[in-house]
Image (cartoon, rainbow, N blue to C red; front, side):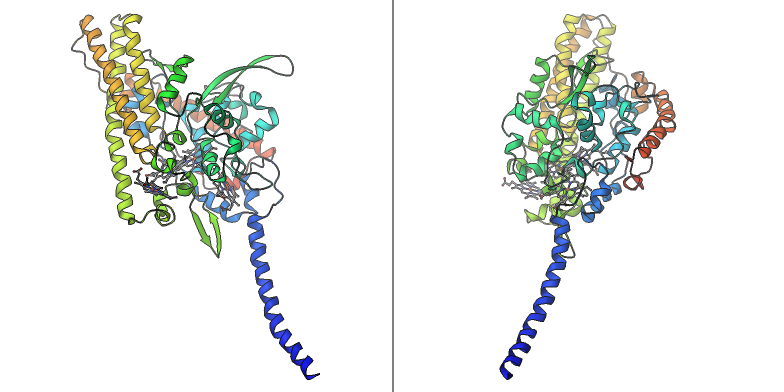
Length: 500
Ligand code: HEC
Ligand code: HEC
Ligand code: HEC
Ligand code: HEC
């Protein structure tokens, strides 16, 4: 009897704390389950707040990207660009990138997307939405890819209303990382060194970003709709079939005679590099050592014992302790100075390249004005095409100076060289037409450069303003009625541009 009471008391003293422990573990497990579990989120749910109900930390940190809200007018700081992009959208308006939450707003507000008055007008094709919103893979699923890529940008103004979201990078059932843009799968397959089906988890921590942070062009593609009508889609395509290097893509575009636009002053058949961030990163020390984009741009955080990835994608130097210092042991100041030095070196060569190339365009314009022949101009225009493509490729991803400093400086050196080749040839041609002493006119401010190249700036602003006050408002109303628009995600996103 005595023994059994003792056993009972003994058991109780052992069991009760065990139960308490088990309960607390269960509580942690419940929390963990929310993180690891499989909640019921509908396929291609483009409203991030819906995912945020299950993953509040990731969602809240994603909303923090709104803090990176400064508008930095790159044309103002580099008026040579207005000359270099004359006749093309980027000469109208071009700002440095800011937080992910702004991508859709900035795409809608930029003068480049113009002032459409209905779903069929406006300068840009639907392809321009492709790296701006999870509504894109949703629409591709609903309509089919070729239909999605057909028509004008304004066609989908009332459908594409959420900036980058969870559905862009995650599977709704497993939360696993996945790519949602078919063009990256095709691009990788054409290049050949890494097929998407062989991608590891670490590869995907980079490839989800490469869906958008890569070089692309719009490939005209014929198709027939279900009523038998012939249509042409403009399909986002990664030009990777010959390789990732700047020379490989240059050869790819030259082989198919691809032209983004004809330069207004020099009449050169131009290429516009987009943002080959992934391709250049692969040539740098980090890319070569398999350090992923997420390792630096999405550091792990701890909150109440829970570890999660910060979705506040931004500048890794804002959180050196959780990024660089995971792998390096220099102090913060040293790392910061190293990055700043790399930026200064890139800026020095980039500024020289821009000056050389802008002058080459203006000198070529003069030669044409004086009657230079197509045969005289052809080799010059080829040099200009390649010089500007290379300059653009090297800097357009914004982070290349750090991701791959040597490759960036190498490409800039070849850009300057090709630009100077054009100018040497131009001197001979100008001399032949009695203009050996010609000096390119002043393009030292954005305004001077826009006047010089005949850009109707105020007209563009006026058209945009009308659009924003009319059609844009209708888009929001219609999308709200369809249940697509989420005011929560857009809260605090103020109207900010360089032109107003
Ligand atoms: C759906 C397309 C898309 C995906 C996917 C994407 N980005 Fe971006 N990213 C953009 C766009 C567009 C901008 C420019 C936004 C703006 O200026 O409004 C941008 C801006 C940025 C910036 C600048 C932020 C700032 O505050 O200045 C960084 C850094 C960045 N992205 C890194 C990444 C990384 C790392 C990944 C992968 C984890 C990634 N991006 C995935 C489209 C994308
Ligand atoms: C080893 C760390 C590291 C890796 C890996 C890395 N980045 Fe960066 N990235 C940086 C740093 C540092 C900067 C410069 C930040 C600054 O000074 O604004 C930067 C800049 C950028 C910028 C320009 C931001 C701006 O506002 O100008 C973009 C976009 C970007 N990175 C995207 C990517 C993508 C996409 C990948 C993967 C393909 C990647 N990064 C891989 C550290 C990294
Ligand atoms: C640009 C791509 C991208 C977008 C957009 C994105 N994520 Fe992630 N997410 C990642 C990456 C990369 C990781 C790290 C995955 C890993 O290594 O396990 C991650 C990890 C996660 C995880 C696993 C736990 C963790 O924190 O590491 C959850 C949950 C998650 N994300 C939720 C979300 C939610 C919710 C949203 C929308 C608000 C979202 N993600 C948007 C790329 C993205
Ligand atoms: C996940 C690990 C990891 C992270 C995070 C990381 N690095 Fe590195 N870093 C490396 C590796 C690996 C190398 C290559 C070392 C070698 O070749 O000896 C490297 C090389 C470098 C180099 C020399 C190569 C060059 O491109 O000049 C610099 C500078 C550097 N890192 C700075 C940084 C900074 C700044 C950050 C934070 C923004 C950072 N790294 C984040 C792993 C990392």
